[in-house]
Amino acid sequence: MSATLLLLIVLALSAAGFVAGRSRALASAGGNSRMLHSLPSYYGFNAALWALLPALLLLVAWLIVQPMLIDARVRGMIPAERYENSGQLSLIMSDVRRVADGLDVAVARGVLEADEAGTIRTEFTNVRERLAEVGVALGSDVDATTLHAAQAYREMSGRANAARNVVILVLAAAGLGLAMLRTNRDFRARNAVEKALLGLLIGAASLAVLTTLGIVLSLIFNTIEFFRLYPATEFFFGTTWSPSFGGGSELGILPLFWGTFYISVIALAVAVPIGLFAAVYLSEYASPAFRAVAKPLLEVLAGIPTIVYGLFALVTVGPMLVSLFGRDGALGVDWMSGGTAVMTAGLVMGIMLIPFVSSLSDDIINAVPQSMRDGSLGLGATPSETVRQVVLPAALPGIVGAILLAASRAIGETMIVVLGAGAAARLSMNPFDAMTTVTAKIVSQLTGDADFASPEALVAFALGMTLFVITLGLNVFALWIVRKYREQYE
Image (cartoon, rainbow, N blue to C red; front, side):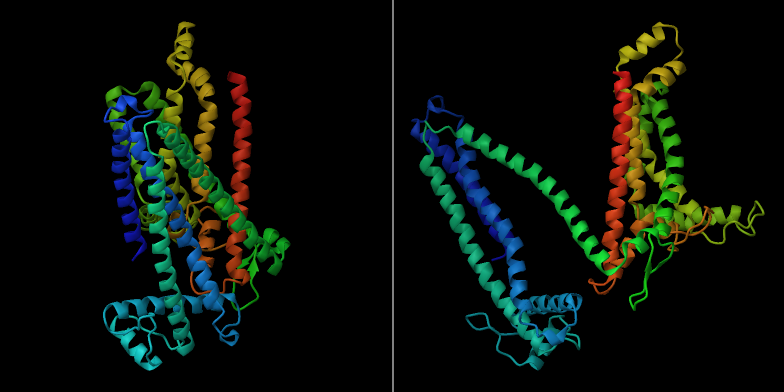
């Protein structure tokens, strides 16, 4: 039985518990709902929650822990001479899992036969041929040892899944039975249901916090491991980015950080004025009919996938800039030799960020009390003076937050940079040169079959940690500005 089918059975049992709990509560009150402590639906929800929540929580924990335990046991079956480091062992385990899935498919289709215990007793050569019949091709590096490990992986997974199904169903039935025993007209079902919902809300909030903590700890531990293999001074102050998985890498972050900063500044220089002016016009000057049409059209830009922006930069904006600033361009200057450049990515990224600035700023400006506008106009100020001297200063903290959101979006963008800015890591003041960013190199360093224990792979976490610290610093600085101006205008 699959986990999906098991979940559907538990949900059905929970739904049956709702009906049974509600009916039992009404029966205990002689059919008169006024004799019940809570509404009849609360008794149904109490029974449903007791049948669903314990089983669901155990199912989630089981699905997380079971693969980890089975992987740990199967890893011990791989001879140490088969691999040199943890990266090669991970590749072998990928083959083990793939072959185990293929064995399941082959048994299900009748290509291979298994005994009552689920063991497949067939020679390695025959298994290779049978798996090829169901589309599972074994490479030359998959030998009898890997097949034996895959068979053990499959058997342990089968036993664990069978135990999981029994335990989950028993727990769901026991929870439903306990809820039914407690259900009577004097039971405070509403209090119990509200406590359970409160626990769910606390769990959801805790999950968000723990996820953030897990991401940060993952970055920290892998960054520490990287700095054990590569000097921190060369990483933070090196001016050359030249990774080489054969050895002799130079992993200086300064060219990547400079490209990230340069492209983000150009993007914000495009997005902030246009977005802010658009927000002021839509909120203070545009008619309701025009605003009802213009604002949704402007927000469509935020829904366009970034890969489309990247293609737009590569196919349209890049060639257009070359036609203006290239050797044979209309301006007669030789500033740009190719379509991929900082200016290309910055302009397109700025277009993408316009709705982030305009939509948020528009909502913030509209949140300024109308009484402030009326007071300014009553004192003889013109509408434009009211906007400049009253509305914008009052909305400035929120506008700073909108700009910060746009800046964070610009720093974390990848596809537009890959297609529009190029992949060259260099320190240059020329905005028409090809450069790259931190996020683009994070992707490139984790792509392929590189040894995960090498500095060239672990450097991605150091890059991510550096980017996280920089973004955190920007947030702290923005909060300081917001508090300063908020004290001035309150």
